[in-house]
Length: 323
Ligand code: TXA
Ligand code: MG
Image (cartoon, rainbow, N blue to C red):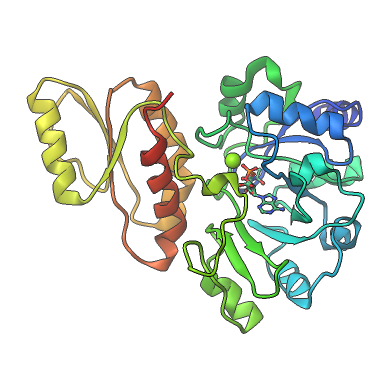
């Protein structure tokens, strides 16, 4: 086993925190069976203690260790999408610590699709509770450097698995209340899930969803410190023009540069949703670090494959500038 992996297992068994790569975003991991270790996650993130954490496991054979009354839909989705960017909310086994579930009767489970973290999970032999490795309310990290910059001494070790492939957090599906409900959109879409289950799923914002405690569902989330506006193409062009016309700098993330100016820090947005998602959080971090004073982001197309991105952009714009 490589030396970092060995050290990670030792630290986790000793109740310490380790930054882990996944295909979505980097996680801040602790031994899910150790409440004192899990408490350190909340302290490091500055996250409210009643927000539940996802338990990362090595394979679908671990479902029964953490969950009970598992419906056939859970096995079908696990077979279709694990390892991968899908979290299943299921009724929990009685032994799952309250520190992990926020005291709820459910637990979130996921098998991440990253070779290093799968090796770690196998070597560790248990479940790893891991939220995204950012400070509460801020942008999720998609490189090991992001994690170190954001959490510094708060994390004992960060395993470097390179940049995250997907770039935005997993799709969360609640299977604990009979009918499947998507609590957080992600790279795996409602259509993908419906195709496997041969039944409809409810989506966020549906009237039937009665507001479970999902911190990613807070309106202000995934936010840069710099004020950020989400605008359609023409409004963005006008806003950038007004800003630059006033002699002020401005960051723009759009498919085309709205104008030519030394005051403009322009980052080209991909027209492909998978590439856009892969780039998104790194771009927001870079524009934040560029100290441009205002970030303008072009709204994305209104189609299902852009839904998860539009969700994150909306929350980023809502929470931006509040630090
Ligand atoms: O892609 C991901 O899911 C990443 C990587 C690290 O796996 N993790 C992640 O964790 O995004 P976090 O904690 O930042 O977001 C997980 C969301 C939270 O909003 C939490 O409230 C929700 O999942 N969650 C976890 N357990 C839950 C449960 N039992 N019921 C409802 N929501 C739950
Ligand atoms: Mg998060």
